[in-house]
Image: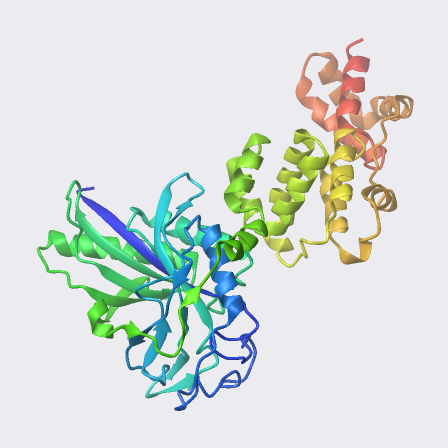
Length: 475
């Protein structure tokens, strides 16, 4: 508690354009053979000139709007020099001095805010696969368009670091600029951490943890590194500015190399790519096509009275957020609340992870909840019908049709229910429970309702059956 952790995060987001940043080569290398999606430029063959991908610029602007950032109408590219086997040219084309995305602000689910310093377009490097004594280079990823989102050092806990990474994922996928598949490296996080005594105006020595590709890793790595640095400070050991790697298996960071500074990369303007000059109309056209973003959904769902935990579950699955918003606009807040709870408890459970969440349609979902509200479907039956609604083979069937096919419609006919209840009361199996209830022992009510449900084949409305039963046995 004597120390405060300060974190800044650089997030590399692969843009889901059809082709690479400076060539017409396929940008989707998932499942492809190594070095199958490459151009002469990726191999750094002399004389090959880059041609900027306009769609990458459009995606960058969309990302900037999603981040609440200013969009710089004038931006330009630079060369960042370093030598590594997966970068044949010996430099990376990036935006050091004039990035396309300026200052912005990201609000986390817990209300904390993280300022965005800037975000810039750059090309990705290739990928190395290590085999003990040797490594192989795959350049399929080389030249993939990225934006690198650089935060200010506004994060002060490992939990907020994770939440920030999650919110960036939501923003980029909602904006439609990235597929957001962390397993395939569509988003990667470099976490910069320093520790200083509480109240200190000077930050501690900065350590960077490179290439984290899961939200859990961001939180675990930040937590471990904080404890490691505090322990070193307590022992009066020096900390060095360095780059460290993270191992999920060991739960530890390990030193990789000393941390480079900007001058080590010998940046200079890229002579082969002209500056990017945007018009206000170009930016406004993109702003006009932006979808509803996570915080807009949060605000709308809070106003409907939906629990915060349920809201986060739904927002993590954009199609559910869209459906719920459409239901709220077409029906009532009460229906939306019930549907939100069904989404959170049924559709996103582990056993239903493979469901196609785009199948359920607005009118059918409203009808399903209304049938439950009217007592036509029990809670269990409602969940059963919902699962059938999300089976593609039932796409043309309404909840009522499905419920009838499954024989799940509850009876609300009091006359029919009274006959069933009278038979149960008269049965020998219920004699003891009937005597207890007449003596004022109401614990036996549940047992009696169970008998009634069994006798009716599960079609009795349990709430109505309980009311009738109590009245009959109170006489």
